[in-house]
Length: 205
Image 1 (cartoon, rainbow, N blue to C red):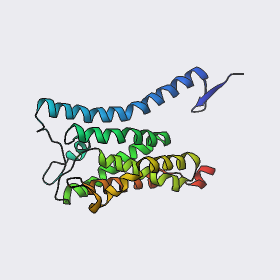
Image 2 (image 1 turned 45 degrees about the vertical axis):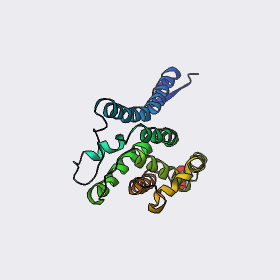
Image 3 (image 1 turned 180 degrees about the horizontal axis):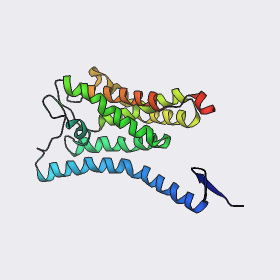
């Protein structure tokens, strides 16, 4: 008996299946590291070569493309390190659910940055909007899907990072911290969860 898998109806060997799965896992591991690496590269160039003057924040009067650069720009290594230590664990929690969910969160976060960029009077930058997007997705997905993996991911996220939720409130955010960026990111994550989740009825089919 040939033990393997099928792709598009065609049988494949177990060796080929294992190779494909290994590549897929490697890709999932690499994706957040690549994105975070871009932020560290930007900050290294900014701090070591340009004296902290290469600021890619979005805000009043900035070009449209700062919507895409703002997550990778930070106010120094301390700011970036703080975001990095939360960004990676939350990224892998979301990727444990699906790559589609992870990419959806990034897309919706950037889309919801548009009104902030257009109308909010203060500029902002950093990965914290994406971090709150990942957290918003994880908080909601367990409630929407009500399956063991999703509930486990929601529980872990709340236990580890629930203390960050007051950062969504203007009166609970430290001076100089963009609570509106946090709030728009969290909302984006919840919208992404609504868009990509599979209901219990769908999961039962």
